[in-house]
Image 1: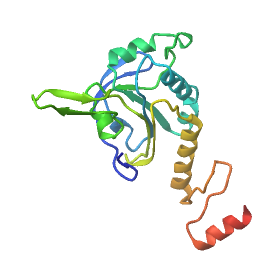
Image 2: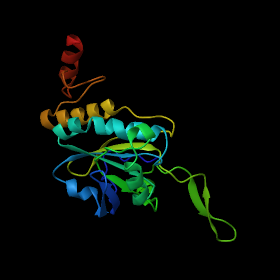
Image 3: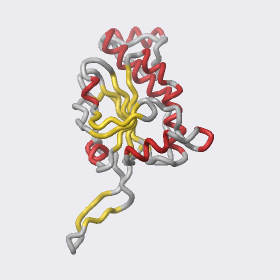
Image 4: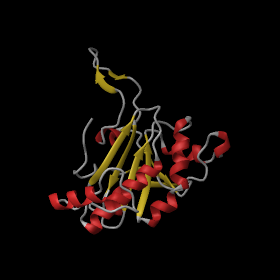
Length: 210
């Protein structure tokens, strides 16, 4: 598994569905450079069971991300037509109707591969035929990308393990706190706690007060 933290987020241009049903032909995260922080997350499949709980959970907290100048973008290896169809199905029926943030269609698997969250592998057999070892879908990867396009945080869950949206918000707060104050965020930090100066004196002062 590649560690992308500290590196430029892999670039891509792909089709996506935005605003709950509008198709975009050439969607790219480049549009947010210099303007927004980005929470970019992968999920395995449309029309499944754990995935809609995550997509709705991000939608429920979308206003909190927007308050922080942060956009949420989802991605799976399904087609844009599949995304659109799932968006037409109500929540009580297992759909994601009401989700408004962009959902990227990684139909050729290159985005998932470049972010190193693609399950399985593909190869050519002895007859020069393309084969796949396992189903080629994305793990539950999440990447926090700053305004310069640098990955500052990543987490990757196995397929059955849903993520915590509040933790994603906490990491946005931590990144922005560090950017604004130059202080580090110690264990279990949240926005109502002090930061930590990166000096021996700062560490000692923090520990003595906690």
